[in-house]
Image 1: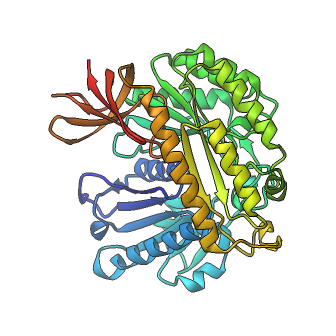
Image 2: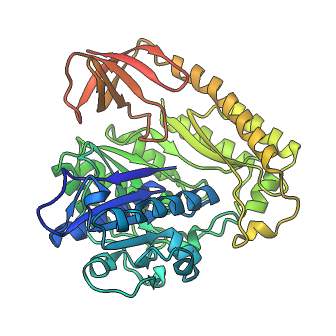
Length: 453
């Protein structure tokens, strides 16, 4: 689970001070940065300590049960500052109020206002103007226009990496997923707006942009534009010194021209994140995923042939309703055969507002967890073997952290931020946010170790 606190230097000189907690995925992080950008443009200062904030915002996630629980815990934690701090306005935004609607206001009376996923633009008005306690703003997310090119945005901690949202919503109907209900149908942004935003991010010192959407590889197919391949071409040409990465692809929407354009540009990371969710044909059908295990094998083989040295990442779900031991064995064989560079495993999260809730033969929680643990143990060995091929090779590394003297932490193009392994560097001095040439001197199960050349 993704958890960020956005903080500034300290308590501001004015009464307009805000502290924001961002929960959930990278798409939520973008929403949080845009809200802070809007507040900053109106004179609000982002500060480091919630005790000194006159306004506190919690941007929530409710994709799965544990995420909703974490959101509620964060709200209750921040609500303390209404009595023990300077907070006069506590606002909850995002997926939690969008999913649970007006009933949430009676269950969390500490909160002054709730904004759904279609109401982020109202954050300034809600914070600055009087509102009735428990106000809920829940406009239809489908009525909100995609982000333009020049929306103000405050990046987190001056990071060298920034997420760039290229579309909002999802038009698919996977039976386990609440996102289309929370975010509406797919709405792709204009390519010129995306490129302009990327240029602005690069001008602010960003070295890597990560393109995100709910279904990134479906970009442009809802609008009839040039699509993802055209967007990648435009970005790579406009910003040749910037690393460009894709997350959250889909096996049904990715097209051959996408991996073709990745193979042509050295600044596009040879990295494909394509969640498959399962590899049993029966379970895929129950999930509402319209492909087979053979289709997936063909897809990954074609990508590997077209993009030498590519890193493949996927995510899968264990314990989906109806998953038998035979289904799980099929998934295990698939993972063993494809040998993904990076694998995320989740146990099925049930809720009565999901279509999958109505399916028969729910799997016991402990069985789902045991299967999760089995896959992660398998992936540990696969990752260890995959990493060993980098020993004594030279790679570029984007340096992001300096935890102790002589030690730096970064990532290669084949390691995505926050979800994959890291590259640990030994050097006397490196500027954070720079890209350096490194020789890999050792490999671990998930991480690489190297020396700066």
